[in-house]
Length: 263
Image (cartoon, rainbow, N blue to C red; front, side):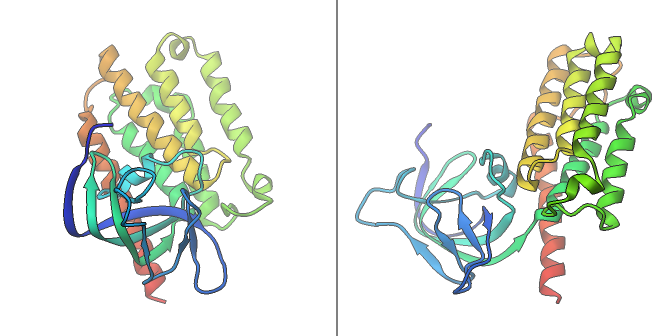
């Protein structure tokens, strides 16, 4: 990793953590270090030691960078944080001496919707929607949204598979892929199916949205690399794709914030 840009000051950033319900106002635990998150309480490192990856409080200036930086975690508690003291800025994250959670929202429900929104964004790149439609992909995502909006599918429900069978939905997608000679001969379309499959996965919401985003960015890479025509029409640059997905995430967080704090 290249050296970060070091400066002292105060910055606003984003932080992702595991939501919990504990005493003393603890609403989350950090993925690294298992530190408690309490609104308005400042966490600090040992300032006698040099600021580094192991001795730092992490965050990101863009929420999408924070989302993509965590693997295999149900990091659904999103906090707006204030960083103070010495700050090291890298391309996709920051390290700081002090971090204060200003407000936090649990995005468990919204992350599953967001994964579907990311799929819709991916569809906007493709000119040949007729092929996409033939493979029943919109039906799977639409059905997924329908079940969530009607309360039939709650992310933390132990009986979730009785309401919406994620495994069956994934099997439907992969079966259609294996039956299609067109898809099997085209790595781009297989990657598209895998991206859709990840968006309706039965994994935790944090894993679902992160995996969907990662695979959709991989689709963008394959489309550019293979230059498949007439599929390749509205393909954004890699940076534009990340920026748009970051914007969708920011909008989802803001809507959730309004919902929570309007109560």
